[in-house]
Length: 344
Image 1 (spheres, rainbow, N blue to C red):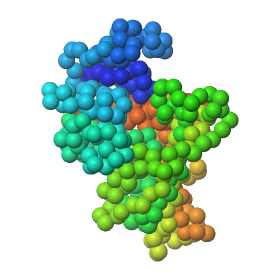
Image 2: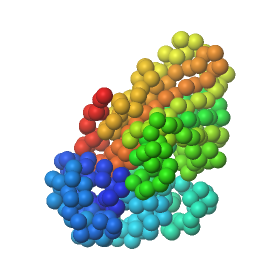
Image 3: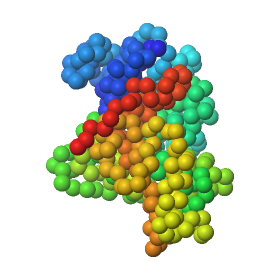
């Protein structure tokens, strides 16, 4: 099958190119990036010198699937004509993740360019929406923070063992901010420092709330989400907390085992979600498509503690997008995604 990437010059776009290059069922035929149009991809990114493509200003030639790695609003504007032509799309931006146009506009501060596609779009957290992804024409690739948070909390919500008051504390490497220059990601500002940001509400919050609310009828989560920027390139570690419902699970070592068993049953057969018995570190997912989840109980306070980690550019962006593509085209879900983590 033939695939193309819109905006290969961003971190998500270049990661897509890296992974797709060795995908046995995909021929990457076109990559775009207007700021670098006319340059060889291998000249712009020397680590991709084996890919014999020129960066184009616009898509050309026929393709079966397009990955859009443009920023929000610009991505929807680029996707709409493709969808009208019958080309399947995986959108890595936020444009089709939120079901309500009004909610999207409130959080992103722009008018949605094509709200008529919101109902058609499938939220592409594959482990939870696989059946819808199979037949989708438009997949909204999840945000990096929501991927880790939702996968950490989904079993507890689905099985009805937690109260809806939830705290998600996440820490991300600086690549999550993209390649654009800003003081926030300047080396001397980030190095040897940790900073909380978006304390009044991060744009990924409505996405987390929306998708967790779909997992259990009548469950209306009230979520405090606080992200932090830490001095590393890749990775997200999310620590999620919620009170256990009275009587739902014993608040002792037996309950800890029951909780782990519950999580393992929920993710039974999943290739990319690993439920572990010790707290994970982000290096355990560096460069691969895994999300590692560690669920436990604070028996003193009666709270769930669910910790997840992933690579924000792979499972949090490009890898998840390729996982969705595999499902959309009936390929093995892990095809092209079997890399082990780079450790240490």
